[in-house]
Amino acid sequence: MTHDDSLSHFEYGAEPFTAVELEAIMAYREEVDGIPDALDMTAESLKEGQPTVVRALLGESAGALNHWYLTLGKALAELLTCTAESTGYSTAAARFLKSSAEEYHHARQRFEYTVTVFSLGLDNSPQGDYPQATSRLNLAMQSLEGGEL
Image 1 (cartoon, helix red, strand yellow):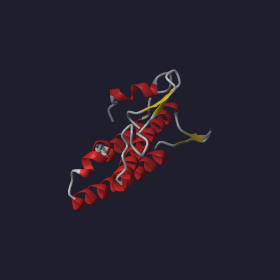
Image 2 (cartoon, helix red, strand yellow; image 1 turned 30 degrees about the vertical axis):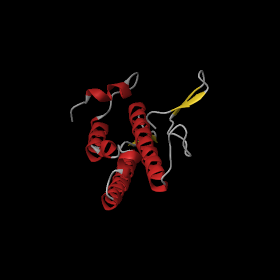
Image 3 (cartoon, rainbow, N blue to C red; image 1 turned 90 degrees about the vertical axis):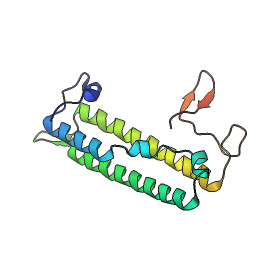
Image 4 (cartoon, rainbow, N blue to C red; image 1 turned 180 degrees about the vertical axis):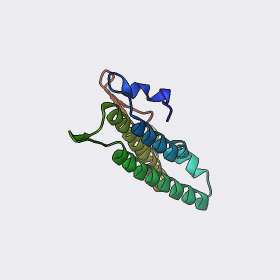
């Protein structure tokens, strides 16, 4: 299994991924390839679609999220290192899994937010009746900020 340069930052100051870890990571990436992009939708874009098409799209998106969830669970099992001394994750594998889980949770939050705004017909504009999507706290500006959930 060849090493992907995008994995190098997970190995910083730690042991490199083992061949077994790399194989599990590549299998995980192959399984979830394209799912985050497929979930990139807004309530506004859904309002433009035909109801039957939108319902199908939301169903497919929910199915993709479930597949991603199950695939992440499989990666959690496959990246677990079991030795005579201990059972756990290497530092690099733990970093990869934390990053992957964060990406999954952000995508799920975006999806659930979009579905809520769309299905309830809420107005999430600054003057609306539902809060805008926020993802971070800016203490210096005393504000919640939007962007990627």
